[in-house]
Structures are given as structure tokens and as C-alpha cells.
Image (cartoon, rainbow, N blue to C red; front, side, top):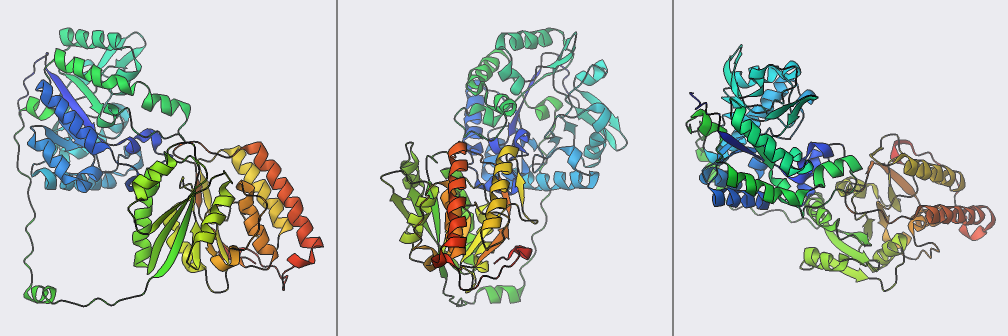
Length: 568
């Protein structure tokens, strides 16, 4: 490897990841839910490829292993269009959360995915976070031992030597590896990053442009420019649950990125790191394919008649009010839920109840579910509230088992396959409980939890069923036990009234411990003051009904605790 040490060289690196992969959203978005999001990395990567073709530029594309495994044809296209493909790690995880063994396993898994897609050996790596020479030098030793030619993960600080601020060879115990650090400008207060990405969007471009020109004249190494493909997508879905700082960092000036990249591509010639280093496109080693055994071939050629099992139909009611932003996420989630239910011998039917939305909720439901034979849309002519919408769906259902879920997926619909079997012959309702000892909450505001827990404490004193939570919309019902309920409250507190009326007439209710998460898309429709007032009114009515109305007294008034998720 004899890099052409040209001070005027400019290297372009493109990070292939989606908006929901970003580290700033780690506390809000779980890796297991990535497949539920509307994926936009493919269109954004192709947009980037077309842009580079337009200016005749080449780049190193650092690709997540998750994307390479999921969409190998896209990764192959990057290589076929003349660009280098390198590793970004598999799951976009910070290295501080990985042991050395886990890091090397991550490298291997990502390398296999990329090499299977491109047929070429992976020679470079960039970590999901910017690394520090003092803390993270072990990474270079591990990469060298694994056969990598270079890394591009380190952000220099004022404490680092001049040599560590530009591309150069690093000697490790396992051999030599090149480091291509993020380009920085030496200011009085320290080193200011000028490489691209968020820095390019947040600071005035005139300043950044001047800094790059200064580097071009004086630096002894190549300028490192980078951006993420999601930064070329100002129309991407907004994660409304993120705090203000994160939203500003991620979304501010997204519309600026396209013209800034175009300006830089027009001013300078850009190339890939691999080309700069003179790396050859070594073919990746392919493992030998095992020969098929004769017995296997003979067995596979036999037509087996699958056993036919009758599926139990289940209806899922989805109340909707101004949920245009959440529906694409829900659509992908429900596909996975349907698959899991089918494996448990359930068939899924959907009833969407639009509660007089004022946005494009109805149009979005029709676009996403309109051609599905198992999906029905009911439109309220007057807004009735979430409990009213659930009851509409319950009464329209034609199955004995009916579920209600939150459109925003604050309770994970993938829990339904565990909840439905709990609706045994003697059970009338299974209700989700984040406050159960085996449940939990994630990122939900403290004031909201305090109000909800306080309400549950009072309901526990009033009703026969001793539960940990009474207000969740996420439930499984025995339809015949619920359809004739005449509730007075149809808003959020009506959800508690449905449970309360069932309890007072002797219905059996069990709890399912699960996790409540913050809404990711859109805004909550709950009006706090009116909801508190509604709950207080409902509590007084339920209290009166239990102790003074003989018609609501159950035939047996024994109480059971909610141990192991079972009550009443």
C-alpha cells in the first residue's frame, strides 16, 4: 500500500443508514423494532449514487451490516457503480457497550453480509460513534488483527499530536493499519470538526467553505468529507418523542444538505479511501457449498400434504384520530403480528375506526390497507373518543376474540400472541399492565406516570379486581362480555369505565405485564385536565354503583390478588 500523499486529495465517505438507526434515538427506538419503520435508505442511497454520477465523484460507502443483510442488491449496486463498500458495523452500536470479543463478532457478521453482496473483501471500517485516541486505541489493534487495511473513526482533540490529525499509518501489535481521522480546524478553543454531516448543516456554509479551503491550502493530508444518506431526505418521518436538542441536531437544515454537497462536488474532485490507498479489489473468500445428500434430495422431491389446521379468527380494533403519521409504522408492525398469529393458528382481521379525523388518516388507511380482504374501515360522523371507537369496533366484530390496540404502538402489538391465549373460557378480558412488577415504562414523562398510577391506586380501592393498571387501551376481550356495555364516558376515561363495568357485573379480568413506551410519531390527543376530571367523575359513579346499586353486584364477591398477572 503506497498512498499517493497528495495534500490536495479530497476523500468522500457516505454513511448508509436510515433515520431510525441514528444513535441520538437509541433510547427511544429498540433494534428489534427497526423492521417496523418505513425504510427510506434505499431511495436515499440511490439518490446519492445518482448525484455522485452527475459530478463524476467516487466515494467509500460505509454500510450497516443490517442493511447489507437485508438488501444485498442495493449494496451490490454501490460496488457496481464504481464505489468502495466498507463496514459501518452491524447494528450501529457504540463500542463502549461491546467487549473485544463482541466487537470482533460484529466485524465478522458485517463483513460476511457485505462480502456476500459485493463479492469483494471489506478493507475499511468506521465506528457508529466518533472514537478517541486515548480511550479507544484498542480498536485499531483489533482491526489490524482482523485484516483491515484502514479505519476512519477517530476525532482528534487538542491533546493529540499533529500527526494524528491527518491520515497516516499506525503501528499496532498486530501490524500496520492506516487511520483516516475526521478533518478538524485548529481554533483557540480547540479543534473544530469540519468534515461534514451535522457540522455542515448547523454552521453557516460560508464558514465551513472557508475552513475547507484553508485545509486545502495548508494541510499535509487528504480532506475527509462525509454525510449520511438520510441527510439527503428532508421529507423523512419525524420522531416527535425526541427531545428538543435531538430534534434540532437531527432535523435542522436538512433541506440545506443537497445544495451544499453539490457545491463541494463542483469545487473539488473526490475519491474513495481505497482508491487513495491503492487497494486492489480482492475477491472475498466464499465458503464451499455443501453437497446435497442423496437422501435429502429424495426426500425433498416427495410432495408432502400439509396437515390442515382450522385457524381461530381474531379481530384487532384500531381506534384512529389524526394518526396519519403513525399508520405506516403500524402497517409494517401488523404484518409481523399477522405472521406470528398465523404460526399459533390464529387468523387476523382488522377493524379501523376513524373517529372523525381532520388530517389524512382515512386516505392513509385506504392506501395502506384498502386492498386487504381482512381489513375494514368504519368512519364516525362525530368524534366520540377512544373508548367510543373501541366499542364501535367491538360491536362490528364477528369473532369471539377481539383485541384493541393503540394506533401509535405505545404498547407493542407483538405482545398480542402472548395475550390472546390468556383469554381462556373463564376469562372475559386480558388487559396490559405496565405497572405490574414484571412490566415497565420507557421514556414516558414522569408527570404522566404519576397521574396514571394515582388513578390506578384509586380504582384498585373501588373495584373488585385488584389490578396494577386500569387505563390501558391495549386489551383482549371476550366479545359477548363487552358488546352490550352502555358506557357513559367515551373518551380516555371511558377505557377505564369499560373495565369497571365488566368488573362490577362479575366479569373476570387478568393482567398481562408489558412495557409502555412513549409515542414516536405525532402528538398525543389526550387533554390532561379534562381527562383528570373525567376520571374523578367516573370514580364516583363506580363507587356508588358498587356499594349502593344492587344490580351491579356480582354473584360472587371474592377478591383475588394480581399475582403472576392473574386477578379477580
